[in-house]
Image (cartoon, rainbow, N blue to C red; front, side, top):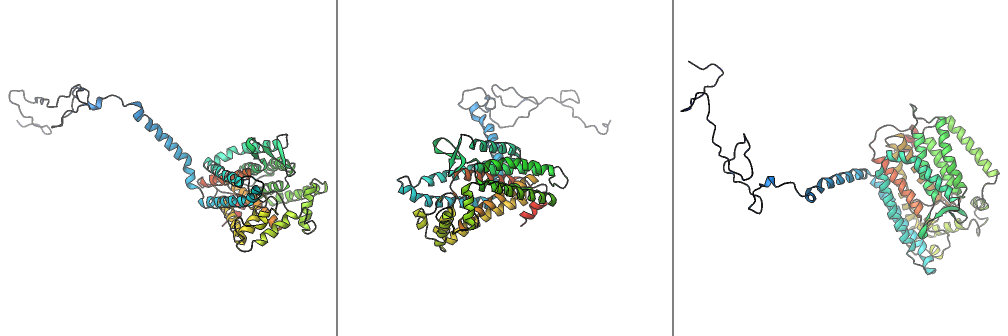
Length: 470
């Protein structure tokens, strides 16, 4: 009888019942200490594995857990490396053109500060490299601050804006307290141990830009234009900072802060009617300050010397007149670094700080002065470029405010050395001697890098796009 379809014919083994198979003999090699695994086919010709050292009975795969120190640290080190790479990932998206321009200005500043300070220090019997070493240290610390602010991220800067503003206001209040120190008639510094000093008004510039960018950049309206209420809050935040700086007194910094506040209000897209009202109110406030004689006598003398340069060449107009003479004597290529006669003779006061551009004009000539101006222009251009490509309104206003800061301060510092503006105490960004100025400038560049490192998404205000359009 034939087998049914679909069923395999089973051979009848000799001596057994049909349909059953005799189990195959177990040919697996005997491994000491290891029980045979059921259903595991042996590999013919495979010799048993003995533990290293010989004589043992435990196989290699049953040697117990690995020592803790050997492998336990590897996953942890891997996690730490991944975290470090995640933190430093924004640095890969930094604007290296901006960084190159900033450090070129910093190196030039170190050389100019050294040349401006070495003759006076040597004549006084002090170390002629004192200002050189300090400015190099300022540049290195500033570089670390730049990287720290750059990897922080724009969202973290936005979250820290109120804290930065509050710290700036408290520091300005401390300046006017017994903790403050007066230098050249202005109570603008706080003395620290080891001879260090902090100038809070330098950090107040960045603190004001941060808080105003957060207020004006977080408008919930559909067109992203600030409402009168938002503008009033911004002015309310700017007024204490400007007032405290003016009380030091530091008129140049106070005017710069006012320009920063006004510029950010314009960049935010404030309606023209509201802008016209603010301009009228500002003009009336300035006229009232002039008539109430809030300006100090030396400030009035500087304004008079600017209007009539030859009226007081031995007094208020002396610094500006000597600065113009020194720049004019440099010619096209200058007299050479460390070879400026007016610089070495000390005819221009405050050379390492306020009048450092004079050193460039005399010793590096017109070519060196143009180089500094071009590098500053590159910094402003890259800041405007970052503002145009910012991912949100906060980033656009922050980058635009920093661009206004560097533009106005550079113009005022260079302009006072050539007679375009009155003499003020504003340093040349990244070039003038001073730790507070260098640190604040580098933090601002780090903030620009943090905005640039964020992925672009979202729109910015129309005035910011027009200003930053290439």
